[in-house]
Image (tube, rainbow, N blue to C red):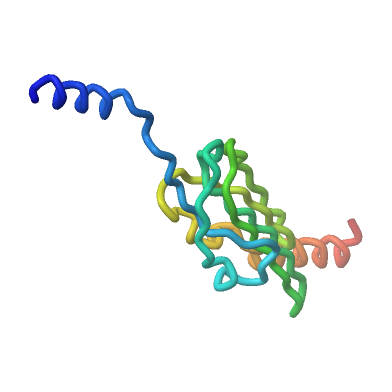
Length: 125
Protein backbone atom coordinates (compact mmCIF):
# COMPACT_ATOMS: atom_id res chain seq x y z
CA UNK A 1 0.00 0.00 0.00
CA UNK A 2 2.87 2.37 0.82
CA UNK A 3 4.47 1.65 -2.57
CA UNK A 4 1.20 2.48 -4.35
CA UNK A 5 0.86 5.81 -2.48
CA UNK A 6 4.50 6.64 -3.15
CA UNK A 7 4.03 5.91 -6.88
CA UNK A 8 0.84 8.00 -6.94
CA UNK A 9 2.64 10.90 -5.25
CA UNK A 10 5.56 10.67 -7.71
CA UNK A 11 3.13 10.64 -10.67
CA UNK A 12 1.28 13.68 -9.30
CA UNK A 13 4.51 15.62 -8.81
CA UNK A 14 5.85 14.78 -12.26
CA UNK A 15 2.61 15.44 -14.10
CA UNK A 16 2.49 18.58 -16.22
CA UNK A 17 0.15 21.27 -14.97
CA UNK A 18 -3.06 21.47 -16.99
CA UNK A 19 -3.44 24.58 -19.14
CA UNK A 20 -6.53 26.44 -18.04
CA UNK A 21 -6.13 30.05 -19.14
CA UNK A 22 -9.46 31.69 -19.87
CA UNK A 23 -9.73 35.09 -21.54
CA UNK A 24 -12.52 37.36 -22.70
CA UNK A 25 -12.91 37.39 -26.48
CA UNK A 26 -14.40 39.70 -29.14
CA UNK A 27 -13.56 41.16 -32.56
CA UNK A 28 -13.93 44.85 -33.42
CA UNK A 29 -16.51 45.66 -30.74
CA UNK A 30 -17.67 49.26 -30.36
CA UNK A 31 -17.77 48.93 -26.55
CA UNK A 32 -16.41 46.74 -23.81
CA UNK A 33 -19.93 45.34 -23.20
CA UNK A 34 -19.57 43.36 -26.42
CA UNK A 35 -16.39 41.72 -25.10
CA UNK A 36 -17.68 39.67 -22.19
CA UNK A 37 -17.57 36.23 -23.84
CA UNK A 38 -15.11 33.95 -22.00
CA UNK A 39 -13.12 31.40 -24.02
CA UNK A 40 -10.62 28.73 -23.03
CA UNK A 41 -7.27 29.46 -24.66
CA UNK A 42 -5.33 26.83 -26.59
CA UNK A 43 -2.37 25.31 -24.76
CA UNK A 44 0.20 27.41 -26.66
CA UNK A 45 -1.47 30.71 -25.65
CA UNK A 46 -0.03 32.15 -22.44
CA UNK A 47 -1.56 35.65 -22.52
CA UNK A 48 -4.91 37.40 -22.71
CA UNK A 49 -4.64 40.35 -25.12
CA UNK A 50 -6.76 43.50 -25.44
CA UNK A 51 -6.38 45.72 -28.51
CA UNK A 52 -7.92 49.20 -28.41
CA UNK A 53 -8.08 51.74 -31.24
CA UNK A 54 -9.93 55.03 -30.86
CA UNK A 55 -10.25 58.18 -32.91
CA UNK A 56 -12.24 61.33 -32.50
CA UNK A 57 -12.52 64.86 -33.75
CA UNK A 58 -15.26 67.35 -33.01
CA UNK A 59 -18.46 65.51 -32.16
CA UNK A 60 -17.41 62.34 -33.96
CA UNK A 61 -15.60 59.52 -32.23
CA UNK A 62 -15.15 55.82 -32.89
CA UNK A 63 -13.47 53.05 -30.97
CA UNK A 64 -12.73 49.42 -31.64
CA UNK A 65 -11.92 46.81 -29.00
CA UNK A 66 -10.69 43.29 -29.74
CA UNK A 67 -9.79 40.66 -27.15
CA UNK A 68 -8.49 37.13 -27.18
CA UNK A 69 -5.65 34.70 -26.46
CA UNK A 70 -2.06 35.00 -27.69
CA UNK A 71 1.18 33.00 -27.40
CA UNK A 72 3.29 36.18 -26.94
CA UNK A 73 2.75 39.53 -25.25
CA UNK A 74 2.86 42.36 -27.83
CA UNK A 75 2.41 45.35 -25.45
CA UNK A 76 2.40 48.74 -27.18
CA UNK A 77 0.57 52.03 -27.04
CA UNK A 78 0.38 55.46 -28.67
CA UNK A 79 -1.76 58.53 -28.01
CA UNK A 80 -1.70 61.31 -30.62
CA UNK A 81 -4.62 63.32 -29.25
CA UNK A 82 -7.09 62.54 -32.03
CA UNK A 83 -5.96 58.93 -32.40
CA UNK A 84 -5.06 56.42 -29.71
CA UNK A 85 -4.05 52.78 -29.95
CA UNK A 86 -3.07 50.27 -27.30
CA UNK A 87 -2.21 46.58 -27.03
CA UNK A 88 -2.09 45.23 -23.49
CA UNK A 89 -1.76 41.74 -22.13
CA UNK A 90 -2.04 39.80 -18.90
CA UNK A 91 -1.75 36.16 -17.90
CA UNK A 92 -4.32 35.24 -15.28
CA UNK A 93 -7.90 33.94 -15.32
CA UNK A 94 -10.19 36.38 -17.24
CA UNK A 95 -7.76 39.23 -16.58
CA UNK A 96 -8.55 41.16 -19.78
CA UNK A 97 -11.91 42.49 -18.60
CA UNK A 98 -10.83 46.12 -19.01
CA UNK A 99 -11.47 47.92 -22.27
CA UNK A 100 -8.04 49.62 -22.13
CA UNK A 101 -9.70 52.71 -20.69
CA UNK A 102 -6.34 54.24 -19.78
CA UNK A 103 -5.70 54.97 -23.46
CA UNK A 104 -8.47 57.15 -24.84
CA UNK A 105 -8.60 60.05 -27.23
CA UNK A 106 -7.30 63.09 -25.33
CA UNK A 107 -9.50 66.11 -25.95
CA UNK A 108 -7.14 68.27 -23.86
CA UNK A 109 -4.24 67.51 -26.23
CA UNK A 110 -6.49 68.17 -29.23
CA UNK A 111 -7.71 71.50 -27.81
CA UNK A 112 -4.14 72.59 -27.00
CA UNK A 113 -2.98 71.74 -30.52
CA UNK A 114 -5.90 73.64 -32.08
CA UNK A 115 -5.24 76.64 -29.83
CA UNK A 116 -1.55 76.63 -30.77
CA UNK A 117 -2.50 76.45 -34.46
CA UNK A 118 -4.95 79.34 -34.09
CA UNK A 119 -2.39 81.49 -32.24
CA UNK A 120 0.31 80.79 -34.82
CA UNK A 121 -2.06 81.66 -37.69
CA UNK A 122 -3.10 84.92 -35.98
CA UNK A 123 0.53 85.83 -35.31
CA UNK A 124 1.40 85.14 -38.94
CA UNK A 125 4.02 82.52 -38.15
